[in-house]
Image 1 (cartoon, rainbow, N blue to C red):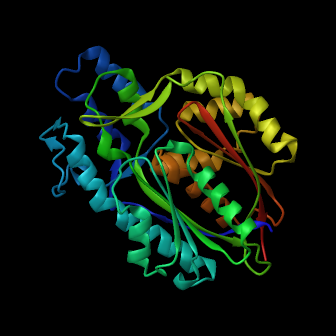
Image 2 (spheres, rainbow, N blue to C red):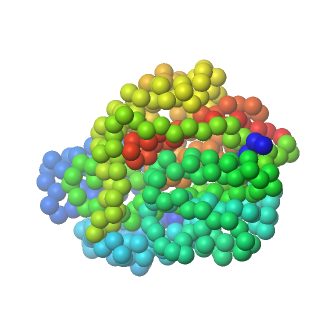
Length: 362
């Protein structure tokens, strides 16, 4: 039984901030010498991001917000517990908003949902986001729930894979997959290059998809196959750990280079003949990652346009980002029934997650 993504919904925090505003704020931090300030300017300006959405209005110079992260132009470093409290407050509404939109577009009603798969790596609590979705959306109390945590930017593909496995085992299953990430909660006011790069790209957002058995009368993406690859190196180049002052991201310049070296073999193994791919959904971990993928796979400059546009408008929203790209491909009137889509995402490890999809129009 082929599983199909019937619809995708997205949600963003109300606060949208220009990349230049965030750049100037970060560069103004006490203790940043001229070298660090130049590195901030270079990283933020090279990110190919115009705007990002954040759950912390103070980052945009606005008032409000329960978490104090700014005193004038000085960014504060709240303890991990305070950051996680804000995640517990702000994440569930975004999960719910994206999920409601996905359900509304699926042709199903909330009481048809049989399984919930939630995804997040930017906070944790129990009862968790999966429990809250059941309560907030009024789903049946018998819904099976799963939560995929701390997988990072690649996690949407494992979540879709789990949904496809569930549908393959139960043709009547209707699975709600929901990702929400609040990366802004974990800004580190450090002049270390890894932290500067992380601050230059990560943002907040949520996305959800409804997955069920293929429905000839409903457009969507058939989920044709999945694969996971651990690269030969990179374990220390992309990592996500819990510190005393938030979660700490390691993202070295080696990440794009490793992806560039290994992506040809991985893509060929997962997708097969690359010339048979009609559209690409590549997670925009950063502009340099997209550049490396485009170059290594010898893609036309337009092939990664959907990924670059999501990065430009929203930044890197970790696990939610890939669903934003698939949403845009589904809404693109130039895409035809039967178009073959290759999805790639990259997570700590360094891990490459991949999926083959087919676009279906009624």
